[in-house]
Image (cartoon, rainbow, N blue to C red; front, side, top):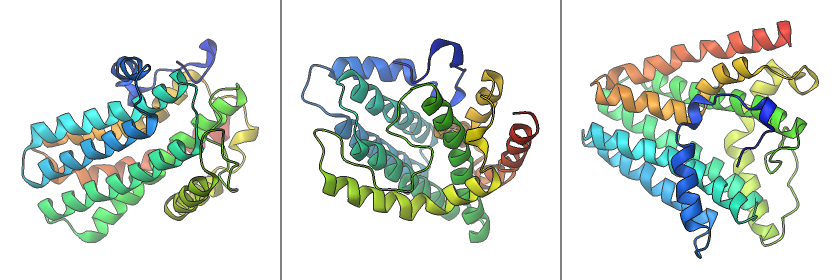
Amino acid sequence: MSKLPKENRFIDVSDYGRPIARIIANSLKETSYTPIDVTIAFVISGLIAVYCIFNGYYFAAAFFLIFKSILDAADGELARLKETPSYTGRFLDSISDIILNFIIFYTLWIITDTNVLFACLAFFGIQLQGTLYNYYYVILRNRFDGDTTSRVFENKTPIALPGESQKNVNILFFLYKAFYGIFDKIIYALDKNASQGKTLPNWLMSLISMFGLGFQLLIISVLLVLGLKEIIIPFFIGYSVLIFLFIFIRKKFY
Protein backbone atom coordinates (compact mmCIF):
# COMPACT_ATOMS: atom_id res chain seq x y z
CA MET A 1 0.00 0.00 0.00
CA SER A 2 1.73 3.13 -1.22
CA LYS A 3 2.01 6.27 0.87
CA LEU A 4 1.74 8.46 -2.26
CA PRO A 5 -0.58 8.87 -5.26
CA LYS A 6 0.62 7.12 -8.41
CA GLU A 7 1.99 10.20 -10.18
CA ASN A 8 4.20 11.11 -7.22
CA ARG A 9 5.68 7.70 -6.56
CA PHE A 10 9.42 7.49 -7.04
CA ILE A 11 11.92 4.66 -7.09
CA ASP A 12 12.95 4.41 -3.45
CA VAL A 13 16.29 2.59 -3.46
CA SER A 14 16.14 2.24 0.32
CA ASP A 15 12.82 0.40 0.09
CA TYR A 16 14.04 -2.71 -1.75
CA GLY A 17 12.51 -4.94 0.93
CA ARG A 18 8.95 -3.68 0.40
CA PRO A 19 7.72 -6.63 -1.73
CA ILE A 20 8.78 -9.15 0.92
CA ALA A 21 7.50 -6.83 3.66
CA ARG A 22 4.06 -6.91 2.03
CA ILE A 23 4.10 -10.69 1.94
CA ILE A 24 4.97 -10.78 5.65
CA ALA A 25 2.30 -8.21 6.48
CA ASN A 26 -0.36 -10.05 4.49
CA SER A 27 0.53 -13.31 6.23
CA LEU A 28 0.00 -11.62 9.60
CA LYS A 29 -3.13 -9.65 8.71
CA GLU A 30 -5.58 -12.18 10.15
CA THR A 31 -3.43 -13.11 13.14
CA SER A 32 -3.10 -11.59 16.59
CA TYR A 33 0.36 -10.23 15.79
CA THR A 34 0.54 -6.44 15.86
CA PRO A 35 2.80 -3.92 14.13
CA ILE A 36 4.55 -3.46 17.50
CA ASP A 37 5.40 -7.18 17.48
CA VAL A 38 7.02 -6.76 14.07
CA THR A 39 8.97 -3.74 15.33
CA ILE A 40 10.27 -5.85 18.21
CA ALA A 41 11.22 -8.54 15.68
CA PHE A 42 13.32 -6.07 13.66
CA VAL A 43 15.08 -4.99 16.85
CA ILE A 44 15.96 -8.63 17.54
CA SER A 45 17.18 -9.06 13.95
CA GLY A 46 19.35 -5.95 14.31
CA LEU A 47 20.86 -7.18 17.58
CA ILE A 48 21.64 -10.56 16.01
CA ALA A 49 23.38 -8.68 13.18
CA VAL A 50 25.46 -6.75 15.73
CA TYR A 51 26.46 -10.02 17.41
CA CYS A 52 27.52 -11.40 14.02
CA ILE A 53 29.53 -8.27 13.19
CA PHE A 54 31.32 -8.42 16.53
CA ASN A 55 32.24 -12.07 16.00
CA GLY A 56 33.24 -11.77 12.35
CA TYR A 57 30.26 -13.60 10.81
CA TYR A 58 29.86 -11.01 8.09
CA PHE A 59 27.61 -12.93 5.68
CA ALA A 60 25.22 -13.67 8.54
CA ALA A 61 25.45 -10.04 9.66
CA ALA A 62 24.50 -8.90 6.16
CA PHE A 63 21.52 -11.24 6.13
CA PHE A 64 20.17 -10.01 9.45
CA LEU A 65 20.77 -6.34 8.60
CA ILE A 66 18.78 -6.72 5.39
CA PHE A 67 16.13 -8.79 7.18
CA LYS A 68 15.90 -6.01 9.76
CA SER A 69 15.30 -3.55 6.92
CA ILE A 70 12.53 -5.74 5.52
CA LEU A 71 10.81 -6.03 8.90
CA ASP A 72 11.20 -2.27 9.33
CA ALA A 73 8.91 -1.88 6.32
CA ALA A 74 6.60 -4.73 7.34
CA ASP A 75 5.44 -3.10 10.59
CA GLY A 76 4.08 -0.09 8.72
CA GLU A 77 2.51 -2.31 6.07
CA LEU A 78 0.78 -4.34 8.75
CA ALA A 79 -0.50 -1.19 10.45
CA ARG A 80 -2.07 -0.06 7.19
CA LEU A 81 -3.55 -3.48 6.44
CA LYS A 82 -5.11 -3.73 9.89
CA GLU A 83 -6.05 -0.05 9.76
CA THR A 84 -4.35 0.54 13.10
CA PRO A 85 -2.05 3.52 12.60
CA SER A 86 -0.46 4.70 15.83
CA TYR A 87 1.99 7.26 17.12
CA THR A 88 3.23 4.57 19.50
CA GLY A 89 4.39 2.47 16.58
CA ARG A 90 5.73 5.46 14.66
CA PHE A 91 7.94 6.71 17.52
CA LEU A 92 8.96 3.26 18.74
CA ASP A 93 10.14 2.46 15.21
CA SER A 94 12.30 5.59 15.01
CA ILE A 95 13.71 5.22 18.53
CA SER A 96 14.62 1.58 17.83
CA ASP A 97 16.35 2.60 14.59
CA ILE A 98 18.61 5.21 16.16
CA ILE A 99 19.57 2.96 19.08
CA LEU A 100 20.44 0.12 16.70
CA ASN A 101 22.41 2.50 14.48
CA PHE A 102 24.41 3.64 17.49
CA ILE A 103 25.12 0.05 18.55
CA ILE A 104 26.15 -0.89 15.00
CA PHE A 105 28.63 1.98 14.73
CA TYR A 106 29.87 1.39 18.27
CA THR A 107 30.59 -2.21 17.25
CA LEU A 108 32.31 -1.09 14.04
CA TRP A 109 34.46 1.27 16.08
CA ILE A 110 35.53 -1.57 18.35
CA ILE A 111 36.35 -4.12 15.63
CA THR A 112 38.20 -1.65 13.40
CA ASP A 113 40.01 0.28 16.14
CA THR A 114 38.99 3.51 14.39
CA ASN A 115 39.44 6.90 16.01
CA VAL A 116 36.39 7.44 18.24
CA LEU A 117 35.87 10.91 16.76
CA PHE A 118 35.52 9.44 13.27
CA ALA A 119 33.05 6.85 14.53
CA CYS A 120 30.96 9.61 16.13
CA LEU A 121 31.09 11.67 12.93
CA ALA A 122 29.94 8.69 10.88
CA PHE A 123 27.04 8.01 13.24
CA PHE A 124 26.11 11.69 13.28
CA GLY A 125 26.37 11.72 9.49
CA ILE A 126 24.03 8.79 8.88
CA GLN A 127 21.46 10.31 11.21
CA LEU A 128 21.57 13.63 9.35
CA GLN A 129 21.30 11.77 6.05
CA GLY A 130 18.23 9.89 7.19
CA THR A 131 16.70 13.02 8.67
CA LEU A 132 17.04 14.91 5.38
CA TYR A 133 15.44 12.07 3.45
CA ASN A 134 12.58 11.77 5.93
CA TYR A 135 12.11 15.55 5.97
CA TYR A 136 11.59 15.77 2.22
CA TYR A 137 9.59 12.53 2.10
CA VAL A 138 7.20 13.53 4.87
CA ILE A 139 6.63 16.90 3.19
CA LEU A 140 5.72 15.04 0.01
CA ARG A 141 3.41 12.61 1.82
CA ASN A 142 1.61 15.35 3.73
CA ARG A 143 1.18 17.40 0.58
CA PHE A 144 -0.68 14.60 -1.18
CA ASP A 145 -2.71 13.20 1.72
CA GLY A 146 -0.41 10.28 2.24
CA ASP A 147 0.39 8.70 5.60
CA THR A 148 0.23 11.49 8.19
CA THR A 149 1.34 9.73 11.39
CA SER A 150 4.73 11.26 10.52
CA ARG A 151 4.55 15.05 10.66
CA VAL A 152 6.78 17.60 8.94
CA PHE A 153 7.50 19.27 12.27
CA GLU A 154 7.56 17.02 15.34
CA ASN A 155 7.34 19.87 17.83
CA LYS A 156 4.22 18.98 19.81
CA THR A 157 3.10 15.80 21.52
CA PRO A 158 0.36 14.31 19.30
CA ILE A 159 -3.03 13.20 20.57
CA ALA A 160 -3.17 9.42 20.84
CA LEU A 161 -5.10 7.67 18.11
CA PRO A 162 -7.90 5.19 18.92
CA GLY A 163 -6.55 2.04 20.50
CA GLU A 164 -3.34 3.50 21.94
CA SER A 165 -2.41 5.00 25.28
CA GLN A 166 -1.76 8.72 25.56
CA LYS A 167 0.78 7.97 28.30
CA ASN A 168 2.77 5.74 25.94
CA VAL A 169 2.62 8.38 23.22
CA ASN A 170 3.88 11.01 25.67
CA ILE A 171 6.83 8.88 26.80
CA LEU A 172 7.83 7.81 23.31
CA PHE A 173 7.52 11.33 21.93
CA PHE A 174 9.77 12.61 24.72
CA LEU A 175 12.36 9.96 23.84
CA TYR A 176 12.00 10.72 20.15
CA LYS A 177 12.70 14.41 20.75
CA ALA A 178 15.67 13.54 23.00
CA PHE A 179 17.24 11.33 20.33
CA TYR A 180 16.27 13.14 17.13
CA GLY A 181 15.77 16.75 18.19
CA ILE A 182 19.29 17.88 17.31
CA PHE A 183 19.16 16.30 13.85
CA ASP A 184 15.72 17.77 13.10
CA LYS A 185 16.93 21.22 14.15
CA ILE A 186 20.06 21.04 11.99
CA ILE A 187 18.20 19.94 8.86
CA TYR A 188 15.48 22.51 9.42
CA ALA A 189 18.11 25.24 9.86
CA LEU A 190 19.76 24.18 6.60
CA ASP A 191 16.49 24.16 4.63
CA LYS A 192 13.68 25.69 6.65
CA ASN A 193 11.56 26.63 3.64
CA ALA A 194 11.41 23.19 2.04
CA SER A 195 7.74 22.70 2.90
CA GLN A 196 6.88 25.90 1.01
CA GLY A 197 8.81 25.01 -2.11
CA LYS A 198 7.80 23.17 -5.26
CA THR A 199 7.12 19.46 -5.25
CA LEU A 200 10.43 17.66 -5.67
CA PRO A 201 10.63 15.64 -8.90
CA ASN A 202 10.63 11.86 -8.69
CA TRP A 203 14.22 11.58 -9.96
CA LEU A 204 15.53 13.81 -7.17
CA MET A 205 13.58 11.95 -4.50
CA SER A 206 15.08 8.71 -5.85
CA LEU A 207 18.58 10.14 -5.41
CA ILE A 208 17.79 11.40 -1.92
CA SER A 209 16.42 7.96 -1.03
CA MET A 210 20.04 6.78 -1.01
CA PHE A 211 20.00 8.33 2.48
CA GLY A 212 17.22 5.98 3.58
CA LEU A 213 18.12 3.55 6.35
CA GLY A 214 17.47 0.53 4.16
CA PHE A 215 20.09 1.66 1.64
CA GLN A 216 22.52 2.59 4.40
CA LEU A 217 22.21 -0.92 5.86
CA LEU A 218 22.67 -2.39 2.39
CA ILE A 219 25.93 -0.45 1.95
CA ILE A 220 27.16 -1.65 5.34
CA SER A 221 26.21 -5.23 4.44
CA VAL A 222 28.04 -5.14 1.10
CA LEU A 223 31.19 -3.66 2.62
CA LEU A 224 31.16 -6.27 5.39
CA VAL A 225 30.79 -9.14 2.91
CA LEU A 226 33.60 -7.70 0.77
CA GLY A 227 35.89 -7.63 3.81
CA LEU A 228 36.01 -3.85 3.83
CA LYS A 229 34.81 -3.18 7.36
CA GLU A 230 37.51 -0.53 7.84
CA ILE A 231 35.96 1.48 4.99
CA ILE A 232 32.48 1.78 6.50
CA ILE A 233 33.11 4.60 8.97
CA PRO A 234 35.12 6.86 6.61
CA PHE A 235 32.66 6.10 3.79
CA PHE A 236 29.69 7.45 5.73
CA ILE A 237 31.62 10.54 6.76
CA GLY A 238 32.30 11.31 3.10
CA TYR A 239 28.79 10.28 2.06
CA SER A 240 27.42 13.06 4.24
CA VAL A 241 28.76 15.67 1.81
CA LEU A 242 25.81 14.82 -0.43
CA ILE A 243 23.52 16.38 2.18
CA PHE A 244 24.71 19.82 1.14
CA LEU A 245 24.47 18.98 -2.57
CA PHE A 246 20.84 17.86 -2.29
CA ILE A 247 19.89 20.90 -0.22
CA PHE A 248 21.59 23.18 -2.75
CA ILE A 249 19.62 21.58 -5.61
CA ARG A 250 16.36 21.91 -3.66
CA LYS A 251 16.95 25.56 -2.84
CA LYS A 252 18.24 26.50 -6.30
CA PHE A 253 15.62 24.83 -8.45
CA TYR A 254 12.63 23.85 -6.30
